[in-house]
Length: 133
Image (cartoon, rainbow, N blue to C red; front, side, top):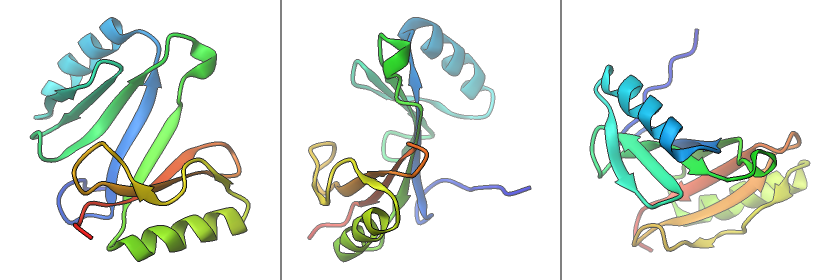
């Protein structure tokens, strides 16, 4: 069995799943995740984050009204620097992935720099660096 430890300094930054009913999903995850020491740490309307603190959210719910549009699986890997983000994106599109948001600054957080790709099965994969330029 593989166990992934999430948190500061780890290579896995966050995971998100698509939901279609915010009320049902947040009630479910609020109850279930509280049993293992996690809580809702951010709420941006259609996106809700869970973790141990606001500084380290790692499990996200992304709402879509139409089940056919639900995001599905999303995994973000923490990269050591911005050059790695560019290398990640180039390797992905060269090896069968599809661009889903090229390397660049995002408005999520002050130093959020990321690239998004879809793997050959359509899973959304991201590389993110949170260090200042």
